[in-house]
Every structure is written in C-alpha cells, then in structure tokens.
Image 1 (tube, rainbow, N blue to C red):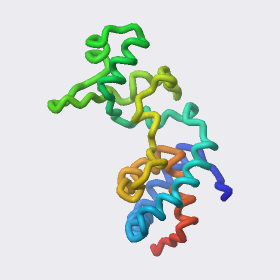
Image 2: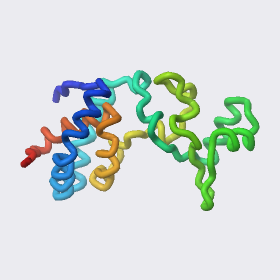
Image 3: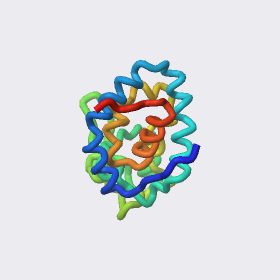
Image 4: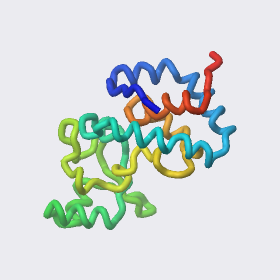
Length: 171
C-alpha cells in the first residue's frame, strides 16, 4: 500500500476539527469488526507510516502528553543525567497517592525545540507512542483518535485505515 504522507500540523489540526463526526462513525464501524482482524489491518499501515515520519522533527506529543514514568526509568535517567534521584524526582516528576510517577510539566522538560534532549534514554511511554503497534487497537480507538489532530503518525494511519477497512462516512 502506498500512503500519501501528510506532516503539516496546521492542516492536520484543521482536518481533525472537520472530521469529528466522521470519526464518531468510524469508531462505531471499527467496534463492529473482529479485533484480531483490525490489528492485522493497522499493523502494516502503522509500520509504513512510522517509517516515513521522523518524529524528531515534530515533537507535538511532547508538547501535549502527560507521560507516566516507572521508578526504574527515573533511577536510570537521574543516573544518566548525573542528578541525585531524589532531586530528579523533585525537579521533573510528580507522584500520585498510589505512587504512580508522571512528568510534572507539559510541554515536557526534555523537549528542546521539536527534539527530545534525552531521546536515546526516553521513557517507555514515549518510545511506544502512539501505541499503534500493540494488540488490542480496537480497545484504544477513543484515545487514538484524540491524537488524530496532533500526531502525524496517528493522522496518516487512521486515514489509511479508513481506506483499507472499506469505511465510508455517511454524513
């Protein structure tokens, strides 16, 4: 499949607004499909799209997402940066009452321009975003579509999936 890749964030944001009603229909359409078959459709699409887009030229996700961080990641990154772990946590993280760690600032502290200053050591949630390569895509439709207007990988993958799945909006 050849996908015409769109990376203009302004264009993508405008289309996201225009296609809100269409996406509601698309979610309903996809929910009726077999989950495993849907995964088989999205996996090759996301591979092609992800290979065609350089995330380090965008950084939109870093400007809008609250990232969960594991204790191990906090320890490793504080060590890599040469910062005492307690100081690292105080400066960069918040901890929920349940002990969940999360980056305490949006945009992310580690975003410099549109690039991640810790890219080689970025958190697992950053590495896996937008999670289109994981099984159970059908269960993440709402969350995925929330990023349609800000993530070129999501935008292009969803548009290609509409074609591959045979979806036709009835607006």
